[in-house]
Image (cartoon, rainbow, N blue to C red):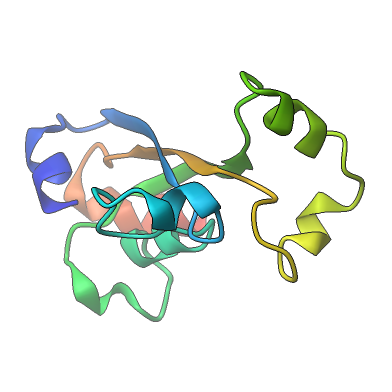
Amino acid sequence: MNEVWRILKPGGRFHGAVPYALSMWAVTDPTHKSFFTDRTFDYFVDGNHNTFYTDKHFIKEYVRLGTPVTTLAGKLRNLIPFRRVLRWFLWNMYDEVQFSLRKPERTEDRGAEARG
């Protein structure tokens, strides 16, 4: 995240998708070294009690769980009712975490925008 912070201009946005930790695809691919949930990105915004990992804080625009609909399994999983609740008890409800983070315009704006 420090490298993303370094290359983004003030006000720049970082959009991405990463493997969801409770997905079979996250743990079966040997190239996946880190696992993410929809709460992982809270560590990179002001106002979280765990922001001591980095001094580079973003503004979280959105974080959502997703399942690509390119396969039959993905299409069927999108039909499951109460998926947001079931994800705490069952694996493979989602495949990825989609997110958008924005670098504050100015460093001193970080706290004001996170609270606003």
